Image (cartoon, rainbow, N blue to C red; front, top):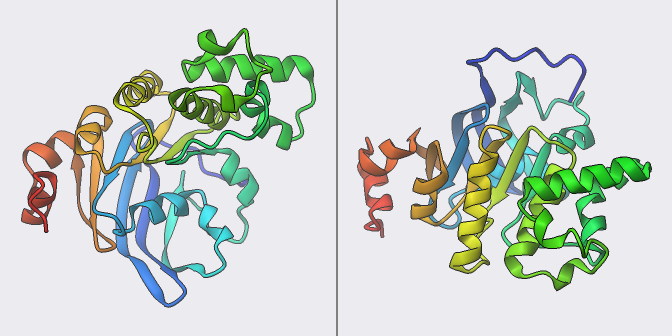
Length: 262
């Protein structure tokens, strides 16, 4: 992020999405989304497949820049008041402040240790002690340290699926980002591993600002402070999670969260 980023105020929205429109080529997938996400909240993005929630998630760290036909049609996404699509923004620096965890756990074909410190190595860190301290810190944050501390130099692919996903979380937090984006982080996991990930997110509450895409309504209710419901590329309703699920303002939201939307 640029050095000129304004100092945040305690009650200011941390991530501001303003009249945001996004397209892949001529196919528009997000329409006029306005959404204010607050610092250290856990926000769940829900809605049927193809509603634009994952595209919005990937727009927040500009990972969709890697897709040739992806483009911002109009509008803004601001973090701490800085428009992240401004030409002055260093995209590499931006992504260092925004960790990303994907639906399918994807550890690199390297050791557990090298996965944990991968981002630091890319950033040019070479000091052995610094790398070791960062690996331990991030593996502890991801509740994995006690399970792997005696096998750090074994292949990461030898871990269970749930452990691999927690390693991916460790890799994401090693650079100490301010924001963690998660795109259906439990979709490929069994119920026990899912519970471990949810417990981990709860333990990390307050240390990061989370934005999580999920199709699991019960998961959203369990972990999210706020929930945003998307439908056909539009933000339908955004409120406290208990309000969205217990007292939605709009009929469409009620139909979706009760499983009656066809």
